[in-house]
Length: 116
Image (cartoon, rainbow, N blue to C red; front, side, top):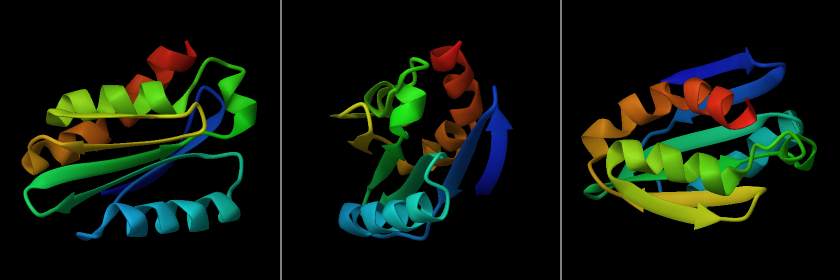
């Protein structure tokens, strides 16, 4: 799954990558942020028997009420995991990797709710 869309004027990039570690997921997120520093980036992968997610939100969008830690928590709830982090960068893991695709498909909806 890969998508780039505009939600309430915000660019949101969502991508499920082949199985990688959380460190690799963060490196991929860093590369995407360099390409589009004002985009919300949400990445997911399946490692071993768990789902992993990483979210980054530019500082400019935290002023609109969108924070990485809350976004990753809501995504993780959808695959049965848990997570946390800062307003700008957060990660989650655990749960059922089979539910990761549905969780990533719901990102735009969750962004709308949070940025309301």
